Image (cartoon, rainbow, N blue to C red; front, side):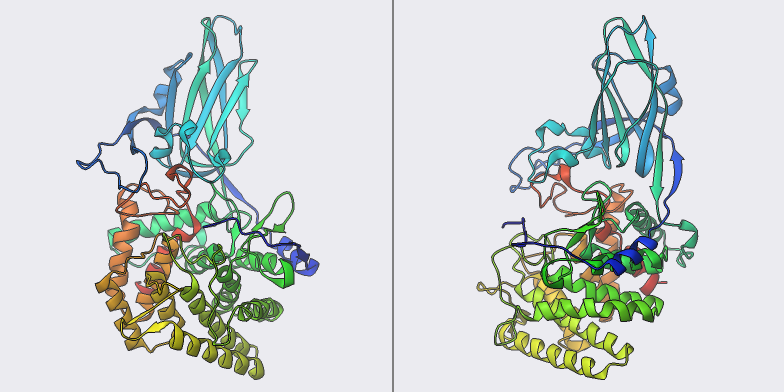
Amino acid sequence: MDIINSIPDFKMTVYPEFVKKAEELKPALSSVLVRPAGLVRITERPQKQDGGVPDRIPFREADFAAEPAESIDALSRKTFGKGDSVCLDFGGHQVGYVSFRVEAVGSPQDAPAYLQIKLGEIPYEMGRDFAGYHGNISRSWLQEEFLHIDVLPAVIRLPRRYAFRYLEFRVLDTSPKYRVIFRDIQCESVTSADSGRVPPLKTADPELILIDRVSRKTMESCMQLVFEDGPKRDRRLWLGDLRLQALTNYYTFRNYDLVRRCLYLFAGLTQNEGRAGACLFLDPKPQVDDTALFDFSLMFVSCLYDYYEATGDRETLRELFPTARRQLELSMRELDEDGVVRDKETWWCFLDWGEGLNKQAGAQAVLIYALKQARQMALWLEDGKIADLYSRQADFVTEGALSRLWDAKAGFFISGEKRQRSWASQVWFVLAGVFDREKNRQLLTRLIQEDLPVKMATPYMYHYYVEALMENGLTDLAVETIRSYWGGMAREGADTFYEVYDPENRFASPYGDRLINSFCHAWSGTPAYFIRKYLT
């Protein structure tokens, strides 16, 4: 599948008044200096008896662990020459700017010091040789630097912002006459999140406390000048990710202005015909990307709906409702005469990274979901005429779904020419509310029992699955999923939750190589939302 979705004849339309409001809401970043907690050894984990690698992984892969080695005080007694290295553990996930002092010991420095600096969010990144990367996303996202230092001593501040827990210094060369020593290593860790605003967690369950803590750390790392999808990669404001970040934020950091800023950015920088882009860049200037995704544009509707529910900010709702309406107008164009979303071969809708997932049915359900939210927003704005319009449109799209996409005999929604049955399609139709609560419960129960082969692949889709369970009274199953899925990452030692997680395949990646995966990702940080909204 082609994942390069660029709009033909792309152009950006700028609405200066919205962009100005967004810039006025630009947050100040707080910072704290964090120093390494200790030295570690990166070791290869023993493989399972069957090799521990699924058949679909086309190469032998290894996983790695970080074992405590020495206290950080030992670093001041160590010198390093050609071929030597040391790996530092900062004790937890950091997002920020690294600085250090390097000195020469021995004879006068007669050649530049040549260093490789490698940073990683998990031990796997530190154990892998970046030269062996074979993914389909640019390797420039891999976090490493090569430095020639002509004059020692020197204080070095790396110019890029990094997302990491582990940092390795490797001396590629000095000369036979001198060695180097590293001092004053620190990270200026930055975020726009204020932990002091987080309400106390009202549970004594140690596992839920741990999951909530990792969830909040994930969010904190992603809260920068906007809600980034991942501070390692892509460092962008993605609309689908924003929806989940905002929901979690309302129950944790409560930074309403940051959500509002992001909404105004999407409304102020649109694609052709007023479409909300899938993502935005901030540098060198705020601009919308030329990627368009059906479900992500509709998430603007959901984001605005959630924001008003959380804040009651009528002015923002009134100003941005026309942008939300435009997303629905453009989406309704994609229907055929029966009210069914036309399927496409390209990467036109996201839903999930599930292998072979057909998007037609899920897209249909997301549209119904957004139409119903738009109807409610129209009622909040006391516009009965527009509310009636969205009621009729929701009914039309629902009738199309039930006549063409519902397989009554099988008891599942189908998608595409091959009549695919997937987890994503069922979950989204449950959320869209085309059936009553009892039928939704039956559909979810049947889904679990039959375990459809096109499964969920990311915490993004798992979020909506848990939401569907919670909203239909299957709370025990929802909690079980939170404990097994996000709890599984936490039990593996995750400081922050991952972009992709498959308990049966730790090497899973939609990009061809796990090395490029984000191990702190916005759409993964939602357990705190579930725990705080539904369980405490």
